[in-house]
Length: 174
Image 1: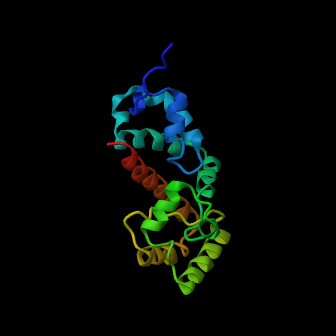
Image 2: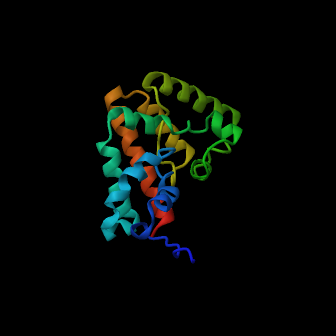
């Protein structure tokens, strides 16, 4: 018996294939793809933008605790996991594209201090869609956002998670 042909169109995938392919779009949060799967009947989900809308609708309707779980699943920028080589493939490429894999000792110290300050204040890591950005832009945003209040920063971080998801989907789909 022949196996069904493999497809790369989300609307034609089995749930297992869909979750395997798109379960990492939101960092370590396969549950978003699992919950989104029943909404794939709309062919609009075969584009990066359409699938992004579907996945974001799941994320946006999640509880604050679930959203916080997505935020805490993200690694620090230029943090300990990056230095140890333990990031996901997507995070490794994204951080490298912004030059965060080649910081000087003094730059790394600034990022480490900001990571520690930010995480102790907000209880999740600083999240920014770094693709297309450079380390100076990231550092300026970091310094500004660490001064935000908790509600503003939670909303900002959630928006950045959605932006990261879109950039990843654009790499995966037309």
